[in-house]
Length: 148
Image 1 (cartoon, rainbow, N blue to C red):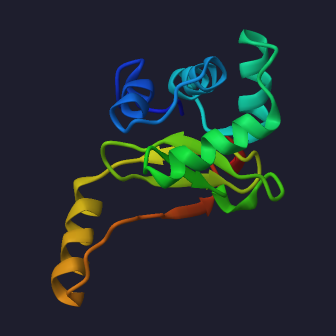
Image 2 (image 1 turned 180 degrees about the horizontal axis):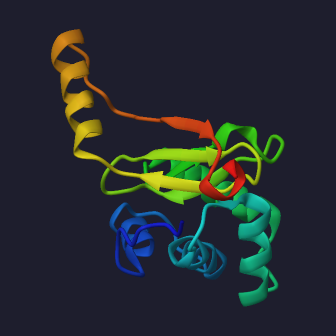
């Protein structure tokens, strides 16, 4: 399932500028790749797509930019049940938390949003006197195609 549209193109660049983070041509390219992604991308995929747009983008710049994005809460790093080895995937930090549902056979990833999930988080905060800053929920099972 494709990622939901959570912000307008240029959002990450605007956030970098608003936070006083230097916006080089290579960083601008990397941010564009992340913002226009229709699926979760591994760092190597981000690098390949960025190099198609600017062949001067290098691996170090991709990892440093991902580190900046993570530190500023603009992207989430996911392991998605390590279905594809030890790869980590990146997605824009969503406006609303969601669950990742992974097919254990074909490795298809679905995203699921629910008001029930929001109510559960509120209940946890209330009953445990705990402020939730990060939510990561992954479920593994079999998609409709792999179940048959």
